[in-house]
Length: 147
Image (cartoon, rainbow, N blue to C red; front, side, top):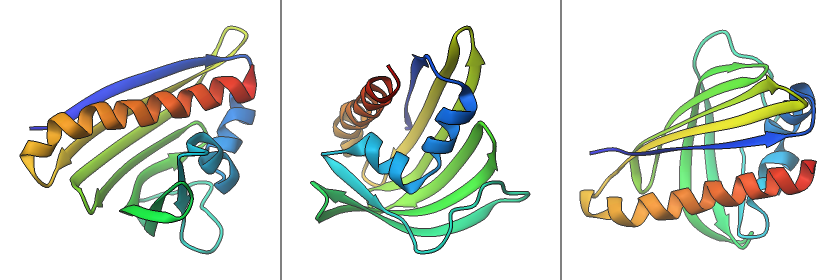
């Protein structure tokens, strides 16, 4: 049984500016700050992919220092304004994250769709509110940054 949810935010900035931050190391970690930090593999992050690619191991660090999760990051799609991730994690058999940054009147809308399958079914009632909270925080940080 999968857990899933969608989070949306309207931002008063051009989609290109928001997208550039959304796929940068600084932007990703600013969304998580101060609770989490994502340690991405070394090297430049891709800007566009023509085919699915395994990006590598990404550690999630609680308060920036304590490893709490490891994401084997795989991108199925990456192009300006859109990415689709399908990865596995230590605690999640499957993790899907789809982000779109869409043009809207007066700026843009960021839409995150998330689905996940915990390795232990009994963890679903714990994971669902926890992940919703993490993404609510990420969108709060986005709205704060671009207000």
